[in-house]
Length: 183
Image: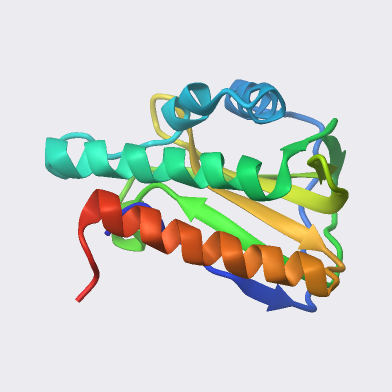
């Protein structure tokens, strides 16, 4: 499966990134879409390797990426303002979506750059401190696409971990509906 490479990960390692002085228009569009909850815009910003995989696989991958953002909003709300950061918190639960398999990315002509932002996701119940890391592909023609979006739920408590596990189970169920059950 090319999309839906989502992992629930508890980490104690912070990430350090290069300077944030220059941002990609793709990142700015992703930030606006994430804050406003514009699922279709977010889905459109990813690269799906049309031509390298079948149209049905592209369609499925786009659906799975959309499901990820629907469930993220349902389980954690939407992020507030995103502020650039050069490091992430050392303790976090990571849930991410990547639009293609590692082999497709490895064999692409992309140069990758990561952009990290501190934020908080908020729903009716509470606020979840987080970082969002956008991994962007720049090709030789200087097109920019999202490769992956990581959401690090910072310093998670039991409730945050429980909600992330619920998110993951629901995500797997929805992916199975789109793709058919895993064997």
